[in-house]
Image (cartoon, rainbow, N blue to C red; front, side, top):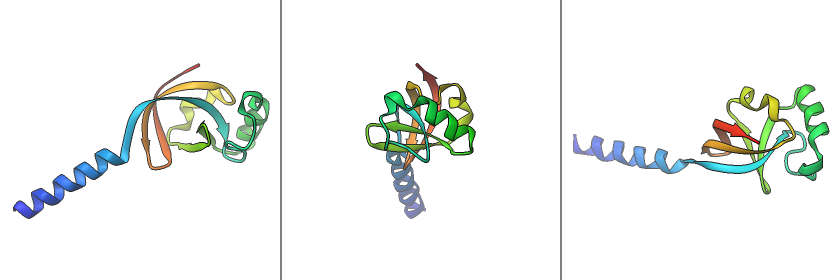
Length: 99
């Protein structure tokens, strides 16, 4: 029984450290361009790419995150935004987004 508790405790700690909750500022871009372009002037291109089928992504500096709930960013494609949520591996789940 103690072995199971130790294993469950380690699993819980691993999951807790794998997920990073917080607030980040970055751009909503498209999966095709990601962080390759000057995102401050990339809004029209990002909107066109997302409308054409590319997935929206969240870019913070050079780091590009997939968005687990992309409907949340539909009105923010190409914009600089502030996101509160949870990053797990290379994906972000958005709780709150604003310009």
